[in-house]
Amino acid sequence: MHWAGAGGPGEGRQFGVSGQTRVEKALVGMPPANDSSLRMSALASGPENPGSRPRGPVLVMPNPPDTGKQRKLWVQRLWLIIVVLFCMELGIILTILPWTRLWTGNSFLLGHPQLRAVLMNNFVRGVVAGLGLVDIWIAVAEAIRYRETSK
Figure 1: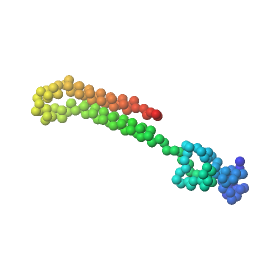
Figure 2: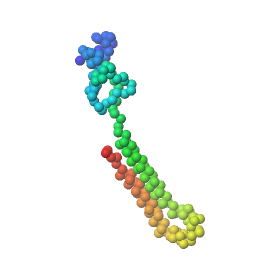
Figure 3: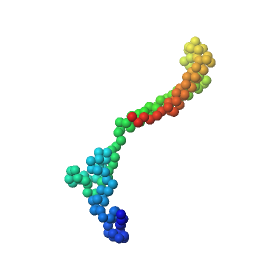
Figure 4: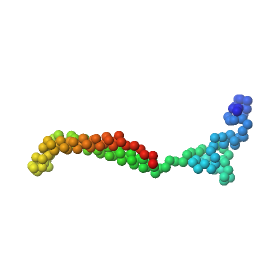
């Protein structure tokens, strides 16, 4: 194998393997013409004769990935983000809210003294805060458990 270039022994020739024609040099490393996994881009001109190989180098690109699978994957990711954020937000609110003034000084509860007595019970406050902690645990568990499937 002999590499020639301008200023070398094969002066005036382009870089390539010596002893090959120009078309053979262009076709080195190209896939067979019937390879369906590759397609010509809009930048390349088609061959003059149908069924023949192109004369010069052709920009070849792989087929685009299946967008149906990509769309399903992104829908799964988006759904996970929504569920995790919702559970975290709800959990934080339910954990903190029973111990704030918003819970005790609620104007709705002032008009309903029996409901206020139940909601001011520390056991009920603890149950609501416990539900908030469960929501936070669900959010963290869902985020950790998530695995992308390659179906």
